[in-house]
Length: 230
Image (cartoon, rainbow, N blue to C red; front, side, top):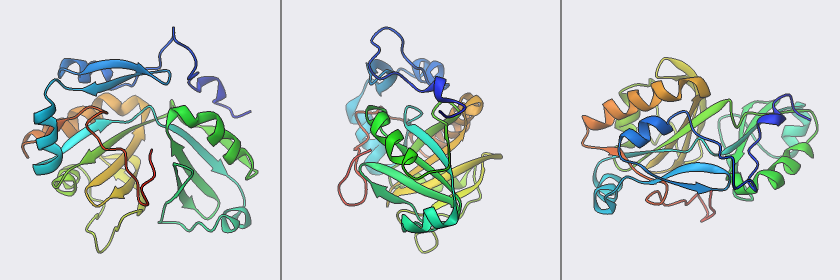
């Protein structure tokens, strides 16, 4: 059992919902919330037209803290058998497998698939820590996603340097975190759970100057390279 296993969301509980550290600010911004897979999710922000415009013309950001997240510490040989290399993430069974070092992985996917994902990471061997409630996550999407990121992060995400599936540990909004290039116009950032409120405010302020704003989970098309979903 992992040291944080007791924090894993029970996707079958209808009475107790896990909540993102960004929920209060999302609610203040007009979010409509629904219970999904054991989480309280901001599914929309009132105007489908406004959200679509952000994703197609400017930039939108979406709280994705509900992703199930595991860190795996194992051997370099075990990682090599998975044909993974640092700097490049792979999609496997609807989840992202992201090598941090030759001996450490960050693996995350939809909360509905938490049990299957846990079995997959346990099969690798080594130490598994459930980081679901230790890391919050946010997607930046739309043609302005890279410009938005550049306003609070120095990680270089120019397409020639960071193509689709690039995975980079680094400083995000002056705090340690991770960056994944999910698609040509879609970036995922992860930082410590306690910094969720700060991350939302930082991103929201930068997005406003670009004509962007929050979008709900239903507006964010859940496609991954190869047509899979997360």
